[in-house]
Length: 439
Image (tube, rainbow, N blue to C red; front, side, top):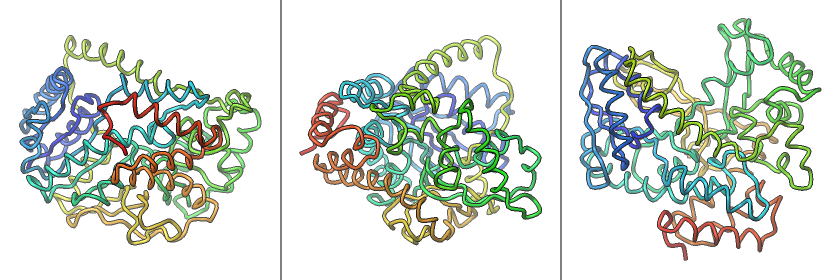
């Protein structure tokens, strides 16, 4: 069996996912094909994974493929393809996504999922993923494409709508949502045997139900404790606790992310909100710098001290592959097209995040029903932007980029239409060859 990792220069993530596969009996003897366009990062991943492979008993085989000219060879015959690319990297593209909007008074925290940063990231990533899709349709048409790259809903939605590649989008936030919440409010004793239901869209999926092992609804006590914690705003999760207060439900992704997905928290007329809600604008660029420096130090340490045997992580990828290969049932929170109206009051064209059963038949989404109306309304403010960005990438019409930005909650609440158009034009020019030619 062949497992291909696109964007293997994402060394820490590649180490976790491929290392996880080496922990699974049915996967450990696979060919692990690493693909990237950055030779140095690809070599670093190879060195680390070869060391892990040796520590795990010499399982499988690692192959490296550098550059677009070797992409088909990397994909040929793959059963699973993992995607973790970042087109344009921290420099120049992420810096551009943050610095140009700031000139217009528009500030962001992460900029990888929604907002003008998320729109631009999608527009430069989709053409690359479409190239992947055309190659996969030719050389591994039956492979499952596991997408980890953000903006998750836009990229997965494009692949599911405009290519023939079997795609599921995967995020880290669903697995740990209820656990993180219960630990943060001192309800660790309710972790064992708990049952929860999470559905919505990526980074704005909702903890719809949570019960303890005896079937007792935990939400009343969760709400009481969250409201108590929010009295002084000293904790780190103010935005999500605000969601509980005003919309009735907790959300999967962090307050740092969610602060920029709506109209409410980053507002030039109310700068005090940043302090009150502990919102750090420009957070993602800071993280990028720290991660780059941190990896340099970690790589040197690993070369000096050696790589230890890998412990399986919580990532979904290896568990999905294991479930399919062994026909062993497993449940994930997956990003899939809503064609079966798995969420009844969201559009069928939307990429939704719902519980999915994985087994020998593949990934099967489950029916959730209708979301509470206020949650569906919140999701729709994001889905509007996602669908228009996908349409822009498909048609290459600049007007759809403008419209996506107009309808983005944060952008539209801060800037007027003419300013938004001017900002979009400047961003397109600045990204240059990273973007197609939009008419």
